[in-house]
Amino acid sequence: MTVYQPLSGLHRPVVIDPGVANFPDLHLDIYCPPGGGVDPSAAADLCRKLGILFENQGAEVFTAVQDRRFQGADLAGDTAVLTARRPTTLSLEIRTRESRQIRYPWSYALAYATLTLAPATTELTFTQDVVIRDERGGLLVTDTFRGRIVRRAGAGVWLGNKFLDWVAREPEEELTGEVAAEDFSADLYRQLSQMVFNATMRASVLSLGLPEGDGR
Image (cartoon, rainbow, N blue to C red; front, side):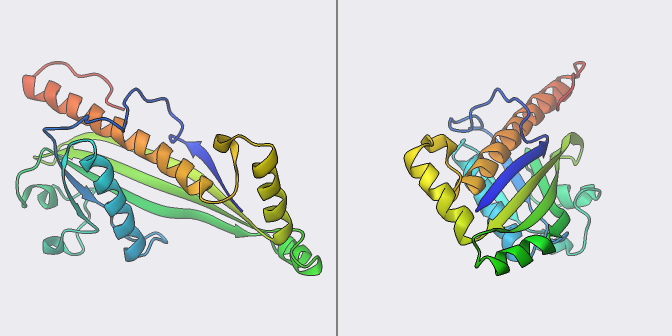
């Protein structure tokens, strides 16, 4: 059984609804560089899902784990990467890194001794750094999200929670299946949608030469 726990940023209130066409006139480049414990296939899968998220909101989206014309460039700090390609309205870069992974040996020993009636527990803390820039490479919005994934493997914990999901819990309160991944995706998609909306507002203000507020 997997449990997702937001730690920082992921549960911040948002006003935007990712289910409607928020960005019909937006051109958005999304970069998902691998590294920090995230392999290229996982980075590409994240980019693909984010591309679908913003296409469903009306944006024209380009996704890549890294611009192949600038192999080895630091996308967060090299504005040439963001300006040398075709003109675009916004560029979003998201870097995911595993901050800490803990395996609890005593839980594995207990799981072995009880034939997995007691769960073996692993805890993973992750961080996601997000940067959004305008078409000239100017910084518009930046933020950091942190969360924790706790995995408890064993027949006892799975059967117990599956039974409770079936007889006692409401669908939105269930703990088995893909609930953890869905909860994390929902939080991340809401926060990124709000960040892109804030970035478009800040870009509009800057283009008019008006005083800007906090874009976070």
